[in-house]
Image (cartoon, rainbow, N blue to C red; front, side):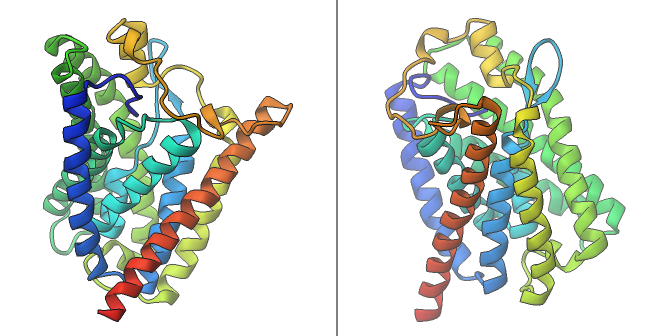
Length: 312
């Protein structure tokens, strides 16, 4: 669902950049007030995990694929403000290092996969889970929240393409909505599985608005970190079919002439490490580098925010 450079007209991407920058600034202020050492670690590990899982495209139908986005999952574990920062960090690494999502479109991608997916997912999860949810109720709420977050993020992207004059409203909303209604099932299952694991092992982590002790987070952080590296190592198994957005604008010809513009040369475009002759190994190594870089950047950013809170 990453919008590339050239797909949005100037008024749309500038507006999205301004709006997302304001939202991220406010999110940083809100997140800083609740940042503990445990949350710093969890933000870094979850960002690395989301990055890795986004590499694993799964086949859907009709020659298209989907991938986990992670906005709702991040919100459930961290709360919406910290989750928004995590999603922005992941999207920034993808755009800068891997040419996945455009530089001009970064603001729009933050709006879609960050603001929309995070807050739709968070709101639905809190409403459906209730105050004292059982493990099964948590999982069901997580599935619905993640599906809705994925679906509404896709509709937001479709509206941006329409506002930019790249596609007719009915065609782009219908196509994006159809494919992401299906892709959202995968998003929901992965999110529900993660929540079910935490509900069974460390349910206190699912109380995002409450402080969590380091001892409670450590085993979860280790587990999720291992899963992130394993997922990156298995990235060669990802479906080669275009994802939902790519299918819409390439296979159906919506805005195809705009989607090939690249403003910044990334060091590892298409998740391939240059200089490695074996294509599979080059992809795996790029994924591992991405996991490390994403985790390190989010850890540094979150640690800096936490330090400012302590100094205030």
